[in-house]
Image (cartoon, rainbow, N blue to C red):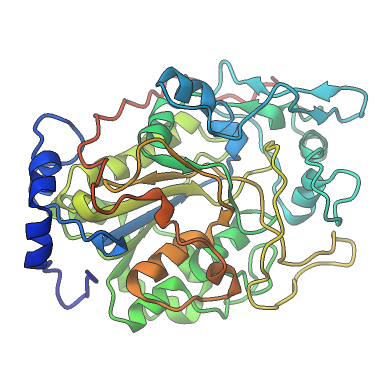
Length: 445
């Protein structure tokens, strides 16, 4: 059901309730199974399709590649009796050293939950994609160490060999994320939207295009956002923020809808009272955003507070929460990004002649993603290529909205992750705690 701003009342068709009576008896009223509140469980109604979802929440944290977080997910999956279904780190994974005389292998971070910065800018990302031919189409994925070393040498960093690009975390660091990705679902072919840094990728996450920008926009972005599309159809939406939001880049729309941008505290009130909007976005917060210089454990615990609030509130029964990242942060991943549809035919408008030349016809690097919902198939792993705009496609599919650009139009609608009849994760086990015991240092590996 579409939740319009004029009414937050929900109704259920009587024939659907009758058809699902046995299911509710078996699934909806199982006591003591953890997760959602009893109020949520007693009001579950499946429709058999995406219209079982009435609340969509998505959240982007910062600068993490798939291999950096989930390269060792198979080890955890096997320990839980599941198949090694994830395309993660292999023994032959590596990158040439800065001086090109040896191979640097991935390593597990031991005594720190953060590390020094690496640049994921347009030029650096293309160099990471192919160290010797950054403007080419062959993704050799051999420039991560080189790029990290260059950044340290040019910025006064200590890791001038670029070893930090090859570090990874696992279940020992991030038990909450490993639980989410396994109890619920993930994908090993989910990419950022372009080979560049945070600002243009976040533009894609709202508008399915960056309108020509490869870096921070220098003027108001003239593109239609998912929020405008929802607004035009009278569908409720909010952005929960600590004071800043990507929507500000779309200035002409933003200034007319500042009332839809509300503080985090409002999210927790809305989740507790069952008044979450039809679509919501949670803006990342500085200091808890999982940026390389920020504790990954602290960031995971921060994200957990939002998911916990949803799980324990009345809206859990018919919600989906997508947790992912805006881009990979210059950290190693072994899967070359494939070609992608150009969103709108607009060429880059901010490249200098000395920059690597290119277009918006290739995805960025792989990202961790966790798809959390009572409808999520437990342990599911997708292998279908998608990017950040697939979340927009899911929203559009649910609410009957047209595509914003050719990019989101080409995405899978993400319904493969869900069983909208059985709601197999309605009564999931209780989530583990996320420790924050590791220090945050920028020591050389």
